[in-house]
Structure formats: C-alpha cells, structure tokens
Length: 554
Image 1 (cartoon, one colour):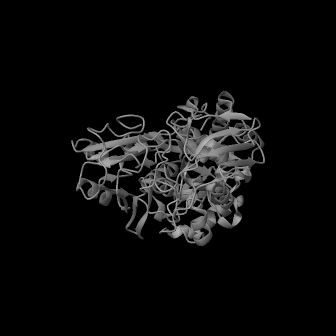
Image 2 (spheres, one colour):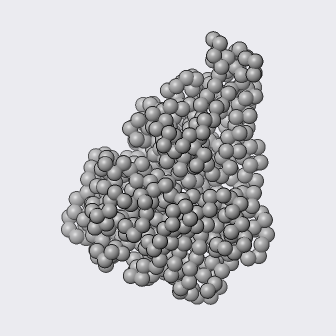
Image 3 (cartoon, one colour):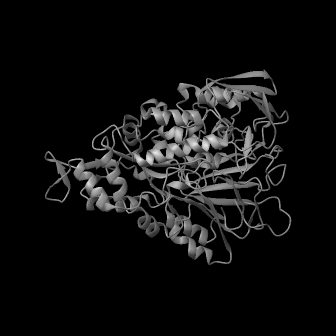
C-alpha cells in the first residue's frame, strides 16, 4: 500500500435536472488566491454576519441535491475526510492520514477520535460507512454525490477509527471528491430518524461543522449558529477552535438589483453573485472589497444532443458552433468580468487545455457552407433554412426559475446569431419538474449547464457513455463514443499527472472538434464585502469559508 501523508502529490484534482440547470458556476481574488485583504488587528469573537445570495436551495440534503448553492451553504455545517488547498494538495481533516492501494481501488483512512456531531454522538468509521452507503443507495436518488463516489463497491469498518473505501475499478479522483461538501457526513442518528426530511432543511441537518442549524424561513433566510465544541478545522484553516462568529445568516435575494441594493444600503454584510454590470461601481467605494475567484470546472456551455436530428449530423453541430459570435456576446453582457470559453473546462481547472484557445473563431460563412453540405439549402418565408420542406428548428428548453447570470440575455444573443444563418432556436419555458423529466429522457436538442469542480474528472461525468441521462448521469450530449470512454476511464485510473493531462486534453479536443459542445463563458465568482468583514476565503470550488471570518461591527 502507498501511505499518503498530509501533503499529497497533486493529483489532477473530480446530474441533471436540477443538475442540468441548478449547478452554479464558481470561480483569484484581488488580494490573493482565495482570501480577503489581511485583517488589521487580532480577530474578534462574537457578532453576526449576514450574507445575501441569489438562490435558495430546492433541497438542503447534500447527498441528494446537485446544486452548488447547497454545497456552498452546507460547507459550514458538514465536514469532509480531507481538505484540498489552492495548489490541489490534500490536507488532513476528519481523517488524519490515509493509504491508497497501488491499483487505486482501495482507500484506508485513519480518523480523528475527538470529533462529535452537534447532536453529541461521535464521528467514527461507522458514520463514514452509513453516509457513503446512503449516498450510493438507489433509494436516496442522489443527483450528484453518487457520481462522486464513482465505481463504489462499499465501505468496511476496520475499527472505530479506521475505515476502508473500496471501488470496483481504479478511481483516482476519489480524494478530490472526498474533499467536497457533497461527501460530507450527517449524524447516523439523524439519518435513521429524519433521512426522508433532510431536503426541507431544519434541525435535522446535523453535522460536525463549525456551525449548526438555528432557523429557516422558506423563501427568506437560513440562520446558522456557532458550534462551540468545534475544534477540528482542516490543516489549512487560519485558526483552530470554534468559529469567531456567533451567528451566520443567509438571505435569499434572487433579484440582482435587490441583492446589490441590500448590500449597498448596509442591510447585509456580504453579497454573492454580484452582477458584472455592478462591479466597477462597487469597486469605486472605499468601504467595499470585491473578492474574485476564477472558474474551475465545466464552463457554461451548450450541449448538442448528438442522438437527435438535426444534431445527429456533425456538420449541423459544427455550423451552430461557428455561427455564434461568442466573444463579443460575452464581453457586452458581462462587462469583461467573465471570459469567453474555448473548451469545456475553465482555465483554472487542473488539466485545462490552453491549446484550444483561438482554434474555432466565429465564422458564419463556414457555418453556411456546412449547412449547405448537410442539405439545408432552402429558405422559407421567414428566412429559415429548409430541407425537404422542413424548417431547420431546434428546441432549447429553459427553466426560468433557475436562470441566473443574465443567461436569458445571452440566450437571446445566441438565437439572433443562429437566425442569421437560418437556424430557428425555440426556447420553451418549463417548470422544474417538466424540465427534469425532459432532460433525463433526452427530449431536447440543446441543453445548457455548467459545473463547479476543481478536478478535470468532470469530463468523464459529462462525456463518458456510462453517464448518459437515461442512467441518471450528466452526459447531456448523449455521446456514446468508445474513444472518449477509453480516455476518460484511463484518466480516472491513474495518478500520473502527465498521463492525465494528455488524456484530458485529447477528450477536450475531441468534443470541440466534433462539436458535441459549444462552450460559452467561464464565469468568475464575485463577492462584495464590507470593510468590517475579515478573514473571508474561497475554497478551490469557490465556496466561501466562514470558520475564520470575524467582523469589527457590533
């Protein structure tokens, strides 16, 4: 066995419906890789901080929900086996050390023995087994956490402080997955008594984190309170012991203008998801800091359903890819705060292939020739292309309840660009239930989504045929390509950095060359904080960490 100690060699760091639309984009701050400006003076204990966010989780259960906002909030309540730092190294957290079998099918963790859940019960090897088995169970209906467990075979309790996680085949991304909130731990006692109630939120959300549940008013706010017993922060934390804050409140302000107004007016201390249009005006204020975090994970993209006409024809897919004027669209809508994307991964993601940049520029003339070659040579009275009397029309369903980051405005620009080459884009508005059903059934031509994760294994989740939506996966392009499967399976089976980079580069190049995906932008996570806020950091997934936060305001 290979013994892995606190600082690992860097492995290239790892849902549709809600998964297809509700995953958030995450995203280096102005003052450091992931931290607010240094505090003046020693930290002060006590007080409260209110954070305005743009989304309320549709489900608070970290094992079920694929939403990034769920993980972002619950990171404060639930701890993980390991923590990942900004360089991609892994640090002890609930596990003090770990061993990995040479074939990467087994991970054995030595656990801390002083950790308790907020209901007073101990965290131990059995808690790990109960939680991981729950995630993997079909009855849990996990929409994302189960995919992070990959080829999970089971968990074995060796003794109260030792646990072995086994996989049916080599699984290199597991440590990164195990560092996320999605694989965090509930008290087995609350799972037994309230496992079916966790989506609703409430006092049954019992973890080991620095904060615990205090109150929830649906549609308005969630309040967490200090866990005074907390004394097991990860090795990278700025202090050990309980959090400085007595209380942490999240207000759900979905309207951008309301959220920014609440921050500007001093009603909240921190505001997330700052619209790019507001950044420069806020930066001009002496009492405001803007924290930035470059996107890591799968960028916001359009996935073209390769199994349905007209996108079963690669020429039509390539035409659509080259007919969208992505750069100017992104620049005008996002005021240079977001970057035009060239590949399916964000530039901050390990394994990102920079060689793809500038390789497929806007070229409507080429798009027109490709559509001619595909036989779409006629025009109807509205100027749309036709073939055999049928209009070239594609369905791109939307779920208005989940729209953010001005994606509706960007969609209008896409529609306008494609109309110029004779492609009609229809945008039926669906409720989340209908959207979910259609997404898993593949009843669409275009689907849009992004995924925050500091790990290129997201390419396997997106393009490997084992992850088709019909099997509950995230392969929204419905790709079934043996070469892609081979590359992504091989990358998940090795810790060799050079080999993984090569395999992931081949995957990124293929899906662009064959136009299975049209990447649009890599977002930047933007937080505005008052100058009274100190110690706020963003982790590699761009989730805010509040354990070290303190406020000078009383």
